[in-house]
Image 1 (cartoon, rainbow, N blue to C red):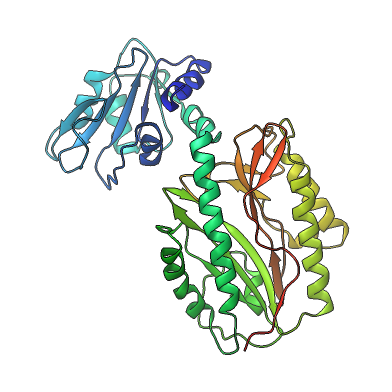
Image 2 (image 1 turned 90 degrees about the horizontal axis):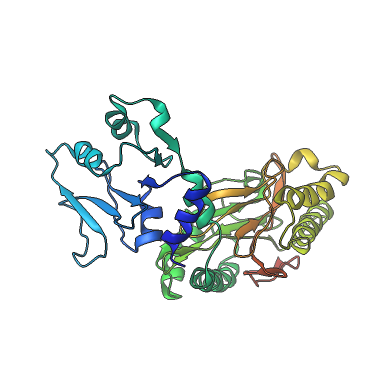
Length: 358
């Protein structure tokens, strides 16, 4: 079954026979055609009869042999009129959440809101179940991330700055065969690690600092994401305590993963361990997010998500404890739900590590 077939099966559950997909990543997922449209209209119209249509500006570089109908337009053409010509007015049109209002409003002229429905889930839920090819690519991206993490540990030395280490990472990824970052790297020393989204600055590493790396690369279009926390020269008793708590929460949530388990239960498992030790308020984000062609895809692992785990899902497990003005710990792995359990895609050590440095 092709990816478009899988999307159509999901559309049928919503009673839909046509859908306009405008998210460029989702169009690539279904067609293999990659376009960065910028301000211009780019879409794939899915039709029940299989005569799918791409809407393309003449500036887009798309192979002519691509097996889809094509409607080409220039910057001065009334492109939404061209779209209307391809839509079956007698049926509801599914649209995705990425369709900009400046394109949607002309489509809605003369029609009622009942003519349109948000069909994003048809694509989002399909993309959430990775096929065998995607799983292999995600393993490869995570393997590169494991190797990169080892090299990052080697850069931890007295006097270096967060920015200096972060600036070296792109070179490391390229040497290892990746295409680039899946997101801007997070490198945090000392109290900066208490900010989950701290961006590298000129903070200088000093003995006793915690060092947090949250990094990811892209390989063959697929993203990796991993976080490790280490210590430079020494670790206080409090640092050791919260580190082991976070690691225990990470491992307990992973151990619970198998098909049929509600994703909210994974979050609850990790959160309870941290809360029972008195740090509940210091774990201030969801446990994880889905990942694939994008670093953050639809779906998460949170107390609010009662969706159950299914084979093929890939998401992060990343509990953390953050003490403002003092320190922070996060440990993150990507996991693949298998037919009988879970496969952890990251293999770099989670043992508490103290780097002697130079």
